[in-house]
Length: 100
Image 1 (spheres, helix red, strand yellow):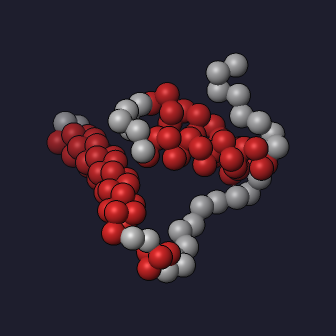
Image 2 (cartoon, rainbow, N blue to C red):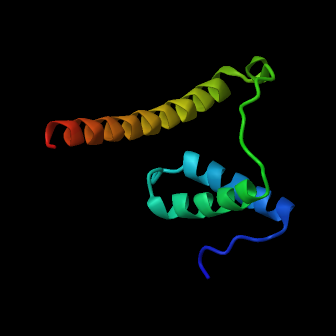
Image 3 (tube, rainbow, N blue to C red):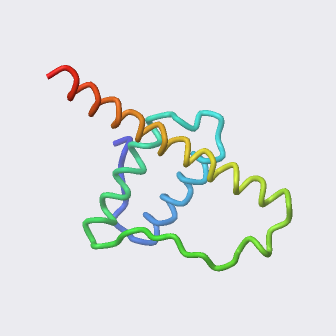
């Protein structure tokens, strides 16, 4: 099966990390095939009661300027995706209110 997600937690975590890295650093960032695998992997973690949180460890103080630029570009891509998603939701709400 193409979207097989392993049951071993460490293997699944490594797989998820690889997918995120490949996706965020690739030209075809918005390819939905990558998102399906990530969603399935995250669903298995959620079933076990795990969630996500962002921890700030002051890690940017150890990055050089080039590394900081790459990290900020990745953050920018993520924010564009979130803004696009919010725009779609806003358009759907507006459309449902004005056309009822």
